[in-house]
Image 1: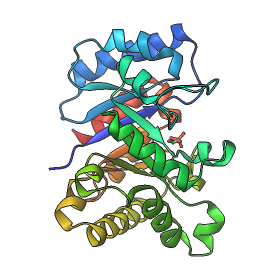
Image 2: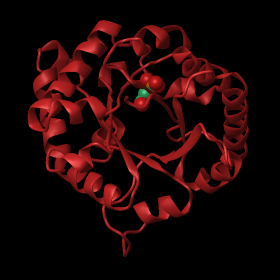
Image 3: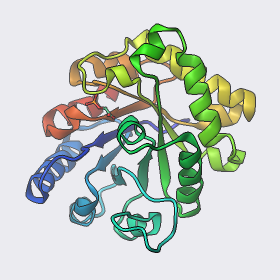
Length: 254
Ligand code: PGA
């Protein structure tokens, strides 16, 4: 069945020593305490990737991801990082289209379609984010908007390619606000996204794709959210910066 995944997006937080401390605490706690088979993905800032990769070593449950990457292989793109560079630092996953990238860095669905295709060609797993802002939800436009995001960025892929994508549904109004979607709201949107994929590809493809929920997931709400049939884990921001909280979120699958 589908992979269960808990990914910690550190965003622009932690110096290298702080990041190493956080990562080694999480790695040890996950190894010692977690009973389930969820994949744990640590997603630090780019410059910490190698340092954290060395700590992960041969640990089976913990993987490394990046928060973004450029859509070209190499060249004169000052300040950017390519998919091949991420792979060479030990990353297996990359977040694409996080709402902060869309909002502050002008990333469009068209650009994200390019990035998704490109990282797949480089054998990285994209964690593709979608989700609506509060005013869209209040106006009842969330299904339409998320459909458009998913269609534009992912539906140019073949069935074989889209199977390799992880999707994160992250309602923007729940990110960093302490206001989480209810388990029912999350389930409703996850099932909706899965149905869209089934309609475009087929049910078997749709059933193989992990869909994570993101937005104020904490140790005390993770179990209820993760127990929904179409929720396959979480993309965690704030709570991923505390090793105990993050590990307890992973343990919500136990
Ligand atoms: P949060 O962030 O857990 O702090 O709400 C989630 C995210 O941005 O992925």
